[in-house]
Image 1 (tube, helix red, strand yellow):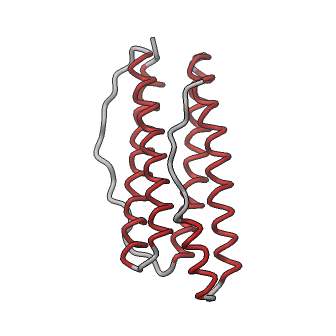
Image 2 (cartoon, helix red, strand yellow):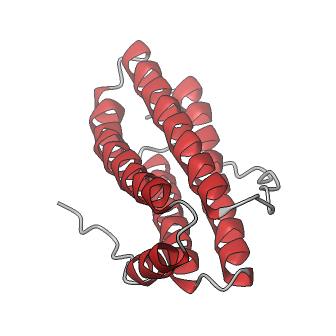
Image 3 (cartoon, one colour):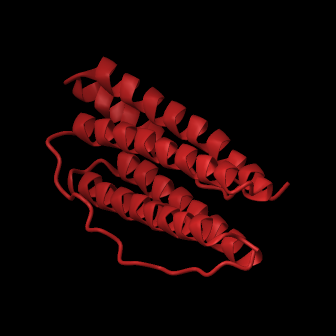
Length: 169
């Protein structure tokens, strides 16, 4: 059985993951409206990944005898000044999510819930990958600057991303 404190914290994280998905769908729409389908695709894949994260946590909470209590999802931003501004926000957001995961682990340790600590380690690894992925895209976009040919090439590259849900170990 999971403690009430950790149950509430996991519900908060489910909401944060759903918000992340919602934010990335909003960013995908913004890119689509600017004829950048590759970037839109990349953001849609991000959104799918975040939904997977929420669902994985949802299932874990149910498996541990907890109570899932879904709350309203905050309205995400829907306007940005540039593709660079979008990716900068993604980088900040992923760093924030990493901190939320670290806080969850601290809660699990405080509650002496070793099963949850082990479960949450998957998210630690995932966040390292998330931050590296957006960091790479952000660095490439900074190198491109205002070069339209570079933007076109990067958009094509971003369009190649495919979301594949991780397979359970």
